[in-house]
Image 1 (tube, rainbow, N blue to C red):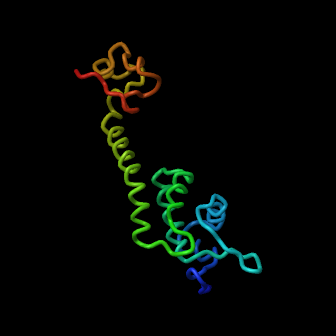
Image 2 (tube, helix red, strand yellow):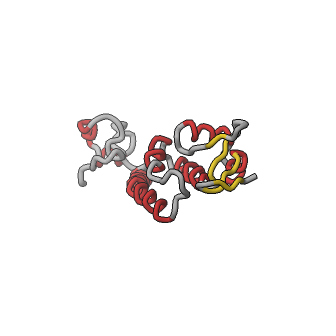
Image 3 (cartoon, rainbow, N blue to C red):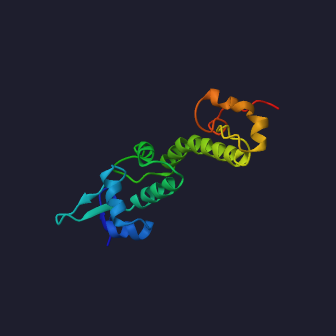
Length: 156
């Protein structure tokens, strides 16, 4: 049941859960982390602004993209308190995420391209590693899969 009050329409946590597919416990956790804010009724029941449906949905999507709750929180703090975020507010959030998403796309593209070839890990188990990483020269750049971490293999 929704209640109309100053600042927007307030809905119960169960309705937020039903509309977003998030568990009630997850919404409580998001509240604990400061990602959404509830007000309490005189009986202690959590009530959320209807616009929190979009915030919770945004949290769920960005988590699926691999962003941490801390990263998500940084961006959500840019949204206004006390009013429903408008299109301009959400566009600002999108710009903030766009650079990070582009970096992830580049990293995934690089991974897809190099995964079946030498990744500079030092195993030298593939014939092509002998071409791209002769004598394990990638190890001089540090530990781990150097070419997937951004180091460039030598030209052959």
